[in-house]
Length: 433
Image 1 (cartoon, rainbow, N blue to C red):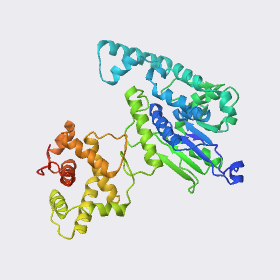
Image 2 (cartoon, one colour):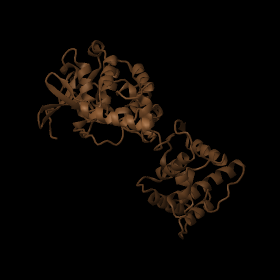
Image 3 (cartoon, helix red, strand yellow):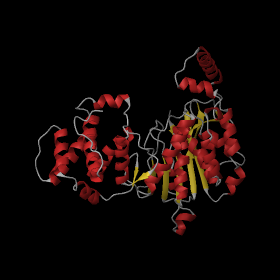
Image 4 (cartoon, rainbow, N blue to C red):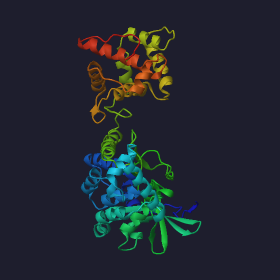
């Protein structure tokens, strides 16, 4: 499918750029149920004093953008906290949950058959509830009076094989039609057709799932873009390289487009909140939020560990190496870098190793830790006798796996920490659990 792009090829100069003001915009990617991540991320942004002059989005991002432009974040957050599949699609939530959990009883199989028949008969998933949800939370009068810019992306079908991208701000949308165009932006390809006038509209993610260029066109020079992880939908590269853009990305899986399960939604909200905190406050860590530690300070901290620790690490890698402590530290760091397939600095390599085992041990991700606090929490979970999941346990039982080697090094680190605190000693053997 080829989509004609009528976006301006030149940057529009408006009142903002003429006045030389810094204008901040928020861009919200499409992704269905994963939009819950944006609710958590926006909460963190607002708590840290961020305000936005404009908000644009695609698909579910367009609905979130609508509420933000209306100045109704509290409503946006509540919508996601109480979200369920039956609020968006005409499905039986209980049976949908059974299908997801692979509970294929006779009743469930009968429901699936009826569902498939209706899907083909209606030409897709029925969107009556989605339209009602959008209409309920779209206050067009309030949106148009708001000083906050609002925009969305959709794709219009012009002919049998002709499509045109529509990047629309609120002034481009006819009166009384905001909710219709938000639905047009969110009209996922599996949904029943959505028409405005004589034209059929499709999900804006078919053209640009993260419309940063809409705000660049209007002269915005400070942008926060909240992405929703892997997606097949295209994303246009920002065409102004000097623009200041802060990306907030999920550090973990946050479900799929149609995964409106309550537990998954709550996880996505919390993940969004802490991933935004990590980005805003420039914290260390990939999945955990770790208070920043200067690389030189980290090196100094690691070099306070005794030679015996690094000698043990060298043995873990089944190799011979001699040298002063600094040489051993650099050598072991490089071996870890290779093992973890990273190209990062030493601090990131060691923190990644610690995070991997903190996650295995079930250390709470939803908290901000100092480096020492995270190590201490991991040590506490070790002494508590945490149990690995079966698949990890199998890997630990094979001495040549990444997990087994990493665990031996982590145990050595925890042993030193325990000795420094004068409590029981972790025995170092083969690293098996």
